[in-house]
Image (tube, rainbow, N blue to C red; front, side, top):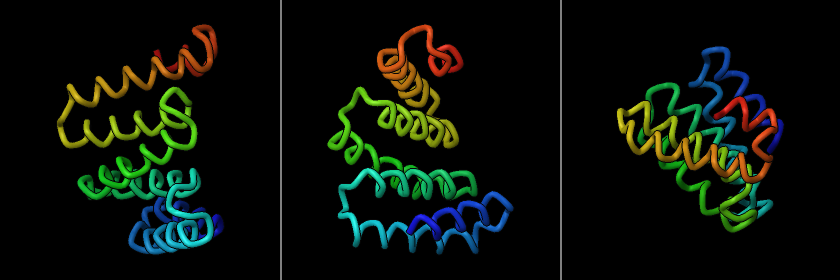
Length: 130
């Protein structure tokens, strides 16, 4: 599944989303079958596919996929983990792209707070996102 996902993401990065999307969807289906629907790798693939679609104008589906990843991360790591914070940030990007700026800002602020608590206020990740 990892190989298909990477291929699909690379194709999308080269402007060939129509070719890359089926590869990432295949990887998602493979991950779900092999790992179960609540595995963090499934959440990661949902995020990547959601971001890919959002960048190419399919914001509603992209947002839905990112939202689907959040409870998986919450169950696997808790809501104070950096992976959950990253997913919140990506959801914020999706909301901002459709003009929901207040909601996007709230999610971004929450993501920064989680990163700060997880990494410490002086950590580079926190300093770069604050």
